[in-house]
Image (cartoon, rainbow, N blue to C red; front, side, top):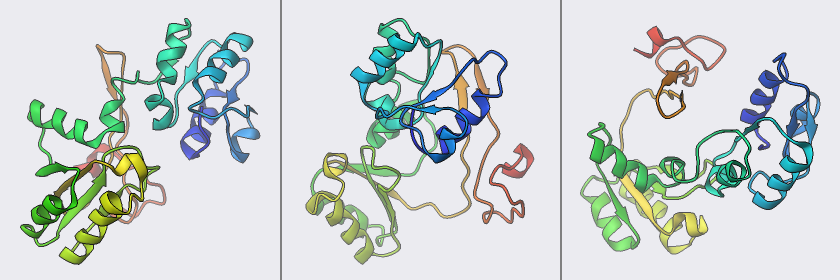
Length: 226
């Protein structure tokens, strides 16, 4: 379920399996429509997705977007007896709440940027001024990939804080914000798949313009990531 490039890639891989008879994508996009049957159901529409799964007797459901996880789609489908690839809503909080994710890292001793959580603009601005505005201001909840503003000055950090806490630009997702110290340098993403016991790490990925990477594709090998 989902409608982005991630779901396009998932559909592309699923249709290659000899175990698969047919693939549906809800709601899908132009790319997925060329490989699977697009279904006009929102990725977070819990009731209709469960009904569709029952009607089609689906053998596996793959959660795509974070919004589906946060809506509890996987929980409802599991309760209905369907195997689901993707986290339940409780586990998904590490993605749907940045303050929760930071607290997990803090408790587990995982290195992370210094941070504070705020619901009022004045104390948030005071914290950023102590760091000359060189911070990242993040809406706590899901914001379609737009909820992080990296700032280089007090003026920029003030504007970012106001956008979230005063102007309510991100609605409920920005009612609480995480402000953390700005870290400069190349970044990479590492995803892993787990069944709760075993963990399999996938290839690291980063933007091709970071760290001198000259490959045309974003995926780099583990040696590059070092």
